[in-house]
Image 1: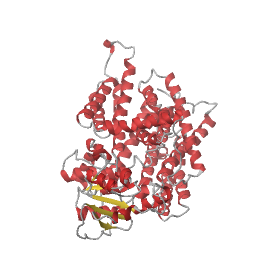
Image 2: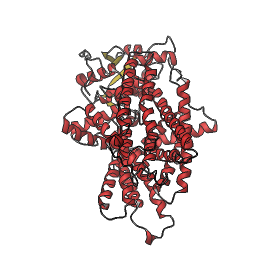
Image 3: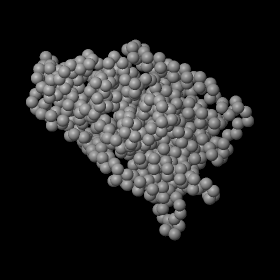
Length: 621
């Protein structure tokens, strides 16, 4: 599907030929220096934020704009070589990856990373896959990431953290190259492919989520790679090399199926739509090898893996989907209040400029998505994968409705990484489709530059304000509740108590104890006991709470006094009421065996001998 007139193509059909190294790489060396300056500003901002510097947020956003603006300006220009476009895309994508490294340069401290640290550790410990992971039970049945990590660790003998950083860096490069090549082949335009990659950078998960050591990032990279080779096979006329393309595509698709559930199901939907379109109106005798064969392979693989290996996915995904849609319908019908946007648990508000940019970003994407869908519809007979991209990209509108509901936010975050691939292509078609018109050429490119800056800035504003920059402990910010004190308590539990004891804890200490502490966690999924809601939210600790802990087989209970101090202000505890810690200390059948400052560990059922003090060093991940 050609988006640009002949003579202005610089995709796989017609590529800009550079006569010298200067023309080949263009502005890339200068952009590299500028982007490096932006990364330096981001690193300074993160360090300042850890010291609670008031200027940290401003410096961070200046650094972010320094990183993103020059590449956007360059990629919206004509006369850029294919090599420079690819180099620029890699430059920005890896710069975003380094932003995540600036967040946590020494240890994993995002919740998904902690969960997969435990899966990787257990697979190394028992030298087998499918070992139960109490922090994320479903991950045990999708061991693709752990298999890759085991291979890297066997070759390098480095720590899980070091190999996780390396793996995700390789995954990021593979994703960027595959997205560019797929978009380029679909649109037959390197210009549109560059615009599509810039839109893909605005995926809410791209900046921090897909940069983490998680199975979703690896699955997305394999998905795009598989689609690229499958598209090459479908478009190939000559017989030479067909089998190799089929095998590589199916290998990628098979790896996706065993790596991440949601991504594999989105892939199955996409290739199914792609496979059905060519069959409509065709006689059975006219059928030939095409996307339908890939669709049959992916769908059958997903069904077989779900039925034989991972049936736990059904409640794991089904319950949030049902609750999210139910709550969204209630919000639309007016029977439930909508979620408050850009507001923390403590009531703190995000600056208006960041809020406004996020809304503008969503509106721009929604408008360009419609424009791109219209252009693709007019050329729908030229490429059957493009209409499939439109159908999957339109899930963006459903996702925005789901975001109105509190439970819908988590659901849309799970889908964002997979939906933004087709969405980015369609938006790129809408943005690049009119860039060559003479009467729009000058103004459209300026408008496209401003729109792409706003799309990326607005998306980053939404995710960064939700995550917040790294800094001191803050009970209202999920990522800041993961800190050194929790790591030290986990190290003490692993070294002194030993692994695999049944622990009850709040959401954060559950992650830390279950990963670095290597403990077995009593959870709602595995034990039908929601500790944080049933125990910690209680106004007092009495026989009922003790009975629940005994029924759950809890051996040890973790109490973080900072959470309770916040509850004294925000509820459910009333000011002046006895603290949870005071109630526990008054019971004869519970013994406090660790006092780590804010974090206490209690042993249930008997009073034991004093145990060694907490270590003073953070555990090596």
